[in-house]
Length: 250
Image (tube, rainbow, N blue to C red):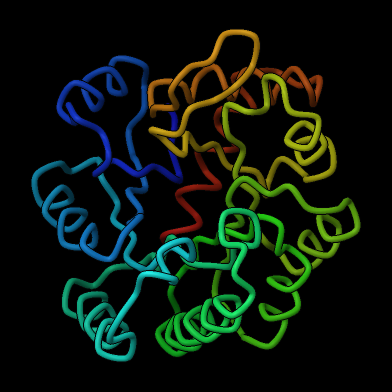
């Protein structure tokens, strides 16, 4: 059995087909995280329709430059989280890779801090993005007492990985593990009891033969993690599955 702990399901054109393929491959649960502000309502509707979907609500940092009426939107998402008893705030975070306008970086940090404070007060899980801003992200995280932290597709330094392990963070591994040295390094450094599998679908992966990410790939991701760890694949499957369950139920 497998968990996909980070997927933008609302961006797929044929969601029923994607979910059917995932089910055939043993994927029992999917964390469906919002990409854009408008996606939050679509995520909620999907979770009502499909029992395997665990919703996450938030504002992705790449949307920040186009965001207006920020305080009103943040308050709206806060209320959606509470009213629907959502356990995951995400995808939230910082981005210095896609967002080059430095004036937007402070705005990203303000929005991130809002959600971290809200998550701390309500004992919610945070699902985080930090591309090219990993050091700043970890520094900000240190200021909050958070119930559980999931760092998605981490590409920061080994030192930050070790710091995250000390803090008890979970690191989720994407299909980039097939070819990315940085992703493989995460697997090497993070203990199995703090690893998760994710598709980040429908993102396009590079590799020798480019392909789209989707939940059905989780079995292959877990198998690759087991190979890197030189561990039994079924054992790794069970550990990662338990990790994901613990993330949303502890």
